Every structure is written in structure tokens, then in C-alpha cells.
Image (cartoon, rainbow, N blue to C red; front, side, top):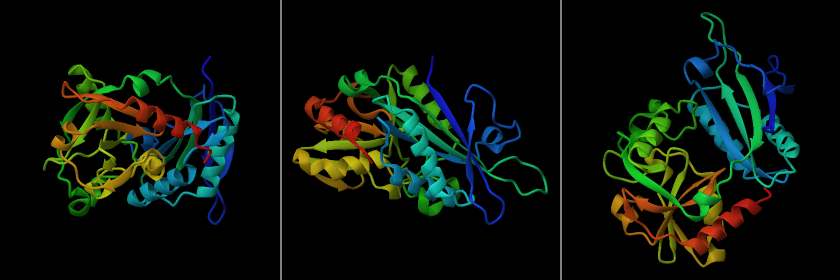
Length: 293
């Protein structure tokens, strides 16, 4: 039986704090009029937990608040959301790897009536990602159709916000699968590497780890930040700079890194083989699994 836990984050009256309510994850909780379902108008974060510890909690909460600002949503009470995550992490404390997803929607759409936001936190056990972490994944490069300066020129497109509107990301993964691959690295229309549909890109060039900058309209990667902070223990330096597809093809190794799957090495790009750095992959994933904050 699947282990599932659900907490509803109920907004308080004006001037009052939100509070948590236990709910049954096996039963419907969301109104068919909620814009989370009808418009994808909301935000979310997903983070790993291990043996009761929530990993990179503050970074995820900060990014949650950033996404809320970008969507003009009410500022989330981060203390309450943090309590929700920690409560679910404790309920999953007998598992080495689990995850918690927090969601904030604009709420039920009623003409002429101010909506109250809808929020919930859901936790369950993580899938087994040993194959992806060791053998690696095959990726294709796909044009995202946006220039790398989209954040500055068109902020209403919400590039870099973690929204519920994931139809394009899921379509990209299906296209990768049609091409015989597992995952995607997006490329801007002016030829710069961006990110995966649910992950950040990291490449190794000799003793240097590199990743594209957030200013290109990509989601700031919490897992990438943690890996870069630990890079010196592996004798590596780090750089954040624009990268091209040629940089990826010439890399000594590359990974798609994310909160739940952790570090998945890239073994092919558009069918061309890429070296897999098995020792560094193992070190990265061991570090990420061992985090206690």
C-alpha cells in the first residue's frame, strides 16, 4: 500500500495566521472550481526528506515565496508551510528517501468575490532512482522557443517561477521519449543551454563545475546550489555562466540535478555518448542523501 500523508494549509481570517488540518489523501479535497485545476494558477515546491529530515527546507521556502511574488499571490506564511513540511517529514521518518510537495493555488474563482488561496502539503515515499543515478539518462536538446533574456523583456511569462502550469514540461518529456530518450535539456531560441523540465543542468570541465545563470529565465536550483557549496570537498571549483550545446557535448561529464532524483548523469546527448563520471556521481548522491537540513 502506498504511504501517503496530507495536510491542508487553511488561510486564517484577516490578520490571523494560517493553520494546518489533517486530511485523507485517499479522498477528494479540491473543488472543481479551484484555479489550480482549471487554470494551473498556482505555485509549488517539492523537496526530499530522509529519516525525518527535510532537505534544503529554507531554500525551498524562499523560492516558494519568490514564486508567489512573481504570480502576485498572497505572501505565504513560511512558518506555517515549514511546519507542514516538518510534520510530514516526521511521519515519513522510517524511510531513507521520501518527498513532500507543497502547493499554493489562487483558490476558487468566483466573479466579483475575492478568492481565498488554497494550500496543501503532501508527502510520500520516493521512487527507486538507483538506475538513473548510476547508469545515467539519455537526453535530447529541445528549443524552448524563448530567448535567454525573456525574464527581462517579458516578465509576465513567469520564466523562472515554479508554477503549476507544467503541460509544456510534460510534453517535452513525451517528445524525448518519442525520440528514444529519457529526459530533456532546454535550449533558448538564441542558442544557450537552460535547464531540464524538472531539473538543473551541471557540467564538469576538468576540475570545474559549471551551470547556467538564473538570469536566463530558469528556475534557481536548490540542489545545484547545495552541490556547488560542497564542490571543494571533491577538489572542484564552480562557475555560473552561459553555456552552449557545444559546451555540453565537449564536457567531461554532466548531470541533471533535482530535489528528489538527485544527480542523474547524462550518458548521451541527442544520441551521442557523453562520459559518465561514476565516482563523482556517487559522491554527489551520497552527499545529497545525507543532508539533514
